[in-house]
Length: 54
Image (cartoon, rainbow, N blue to C red; front, side, top):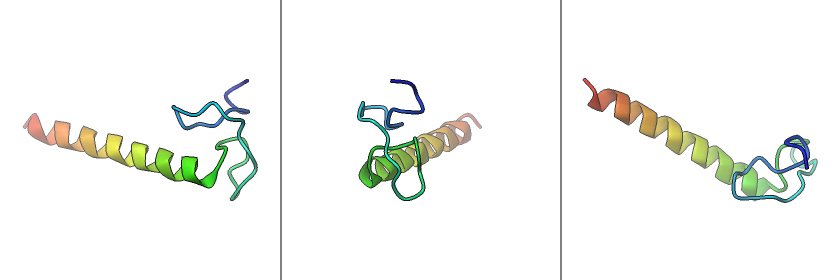
């Protein structure tokens, strides 16, 4: 599968489906929500790390 055909959730290898306007991105709404949470956690960790440096 190509990246466009496979769910973007790192732990998911299901084919992406056209749901909620995310064609070719996620296999389900639940994967989309989890992925957004992972992205938010990564951003928060990067901010915390940057603040700890100063």
